Length: 280
Length: 274
Image 1 (cartoon, chains in turn brown, blue):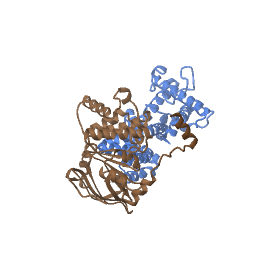
Image 2 (cartoon, chains in turn blue, purple):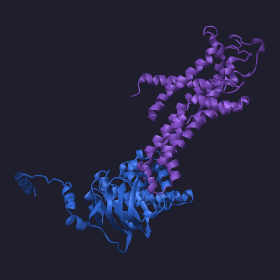
Image 3 (cartoon, rainbow over the protein chains, first blue to last red):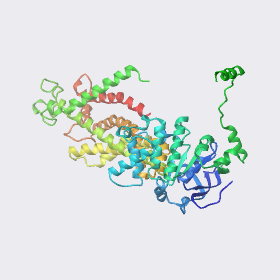
């Protein structure tokens, strides 16, 4: 199932990707990402989700992968851009948040340096301008911008804090599209909920579109406006969150739904029921 | 796991090194007459109250020459190690980070250098230079040569390390932030090479001390009258037996003690690099 381009579309792709001589990882995937929407991309491991994210960001070059088709963003085909042109878009128009925050942050650099590097990639100004941008970015993800915090190394932070720092780096230049590649998979359930809320807040406050990549239908259902199901390199189902979760059309989507973990209901004996009623 | 006797030996070795460096830096006070003054009335003299280690064949105080020679060897070997480590970081680190054809070409050149017998190479290059250069220039040339030719092994290690960082998540994340390639290498990759760079730096120092000694024995190191361990060891050419003039072996004993101490201290660094 594929999409045709529509008005209000930020990014429109028709994409096939292969690694070396191996069969295509993505086969003629057609998806549109609308301005300001949160699009969920769901699929199991190896289905090509991260490959799609890397293709959109032009980061497949170091993986000996070749991409065919087109990824049109604001009238420009990203696949035809030179590296220098692409670099100008990364971080400014298109941003990325990776799965494991502790490995996505540089272990040898202080948080302050990493945030400043993200700022310097697309801005120039006085140290005060830079400090101000860092402070605003940290505030947008509800992190302190104190000296003590900025002096920390990634290993000195919790996973949740590290993920927020990554998000602060990603949203520093107010990108039009944020790609969150399994950005909550490495988090505990409470931190996961906090990060999902943060994504939603950022989406609403900045109008930034989010491509939320996950294998977890539950978290996707909690944040996304639309969901695309990726299976063996193809989009097999695409629709609003409600449509996909309540009336799944494709067999694979139904299998995904069935595989979702369910919380077992506690077994109550007739005697306990009587006691509970009496207590009331 | 680090054993307690390993820790004790490392501590002893560190103290020995500090002591040797400290004493050699105090040469101006311990031997105020300098290393070049000739006591012609006491040429080839055995140890005495005035000359604790005797004098050489033209009457220079051997202790003064050992102290000043130690200073030169111990100050310039780190300088050469720094130069070779920086070159290794630039060649090996950059090649590993860029990967592909860059890495293949850089490593082919490195292998070519590694396949050459290093001593032969040093002798050839040093012999191409005029022998009548001033002592200061000979010191600089000797250690510059060591630095310029000693980067190969470290380069291979750094190429492999940088290659493993090339596709690390944090490099991917920085690229996705729009950080340019040059900054990616210097700001994001090089700081992660630091443990390997430190280890390579320290490991190179004893190797360069020995290399200088080898060149000095062959008369291709630091030129007279400036002393270095290499030039001091040349005195042993004419020694027939250890028992005859044991004080002449002091530079050799010192060299062995210092290099061994370095190896003991470095066992820690090698664990860091591993």
